[in-house]
Length: 230
Image (cartoon, rainbow, N blue to C red; front, side, top):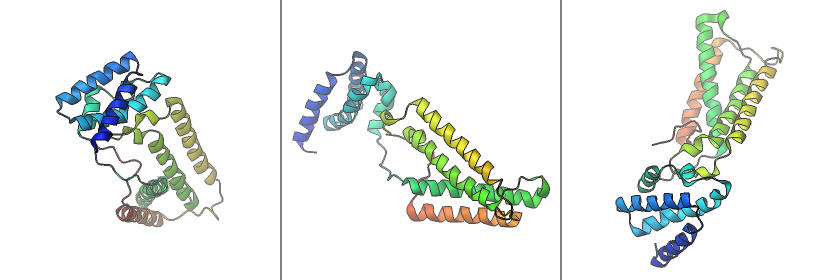
């Protein structure tokens, strides 16, 4: 990075620090000491603070503190020092397809195998219900990523995380819609919503698993249910 750019960062950082609340000023003071103890270069410190301070100045207007946004000083120091490699974001469409195929694979195999083993004691779904269950469920799982999981990943900008009330309302509504769609589709006459034999359900499930594996390899899909790397 050009020395002039670093000097500009340092100057902007000082101006932004003056706009902080006392509590947030103390956080930044402690963070600086922690970064110095970790022998971080002046350039890296300037860049790290330049990423944090604008967000902090903006978000403190809503009452959010540095700790709420960036974790403890030790956690933020660790995140800065061991900054994870930037992972290419998977498009929502591919996440939805990945989730839908996962649900279709699980339910297809489970219902198919249990139907072969236990027959009459197994809940039976028509083919339309099965695919709607997978399709809408894939969308619901994507919403869980959008509103919750993506903010648990290392380096995530938690300042953009939706309010808890909004998150709960959206997810609760999505789950209710999911259950409603499955329930409504089960009322479709069997002549249209054909009930397949267990062996065909198992074949559909196995095919879904295979297609999902192929797509993940081909398009490098990171599923919305993938756990964040520590």
